[in-house]
Length: 147
Image 1: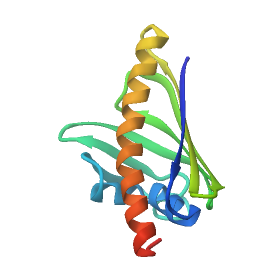
Image 2: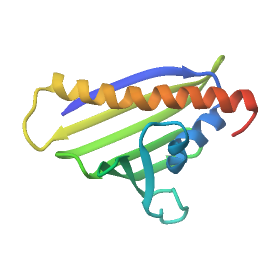
Image 3: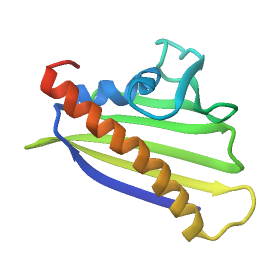
Image 4: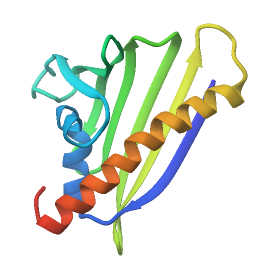
């Protein structure tokens, strides 16, 4: 199993950062790929059980939201689109004097044996694109006072 984690500071309140990450469909506004709700969650449209397709054109993955703790944590798993036995991502938020600490971790087990270093490179690249766009959008929303 390959694991990768990154911790960074977003210059926006935790409520703003949580709302940003929890609204998967909103990723379309600030990331270079499309997100579409495939199946609504059990109690909320984008809540636990919701499945989103995330990708570019015909290439993409399907992620299922497995845990939401308001203002604190979002956990998801890949259910289709990648050659993995399992893939889990967790975004944990805590207060920071400059805004919000975002701790993002991914764990992935490929179907076909692959060196951990190669898997970690893939995890790091996919995480980086999300964090760069999300950080920029969180700062914009924080400055605008929009949650």
